[in-house]
Image (cartoon, rainbow, N blue to C red; front, side):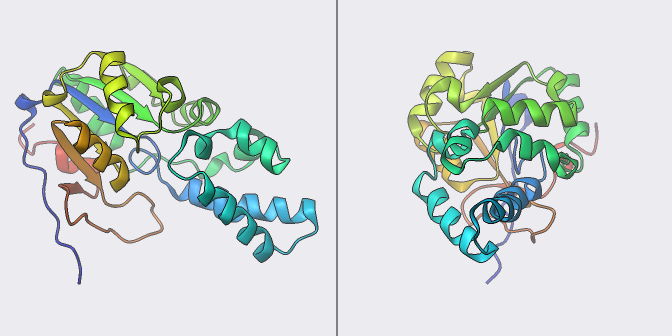
Length: 227
């Protein structure tokens, strides 16, 4: 059974602050999926005399062991653990880093209507640097916050309380857009005012709406037709 779309129904007059995830939300997650599931296993296999299938199985177990923690996105951790220069490998396939359709239009719209906009990501600071250099999105944000700066991953409710102190926003007048249900769950537990699920994180997978959260396919859905 296909989940029907729950459409966001908030008014922009109810919002002061917009929190936006990066990978899968603003950027096409195909880059990350390809990098960790195909490219890294290929290089790891070559370096360790393994088949790609064997390498993928080993790496998947290692990935899952630190899922939803800061280590999962820590490039230095993976460089040490795998004996690879992960930032250098990311740069070799950075042509796959792409901005989702309508993201720039949406960010420009938020600027025109005077909202405070923050990029809030689990991505490691080295990953962030690579992606901002490639996409030139950095100038659209009032602040950019990596989870390592907060000390928790976004899947952990403690993250949001510390972020509120860090940025000084009113959570009841704040909207968070993210492509990960676990992140939205933790933000909901914390009491975030408005939540939006991004239903097409990767250009290579079909749209999949959330059974629980208001969802969009692309950000043009949050720009009023009358604007």
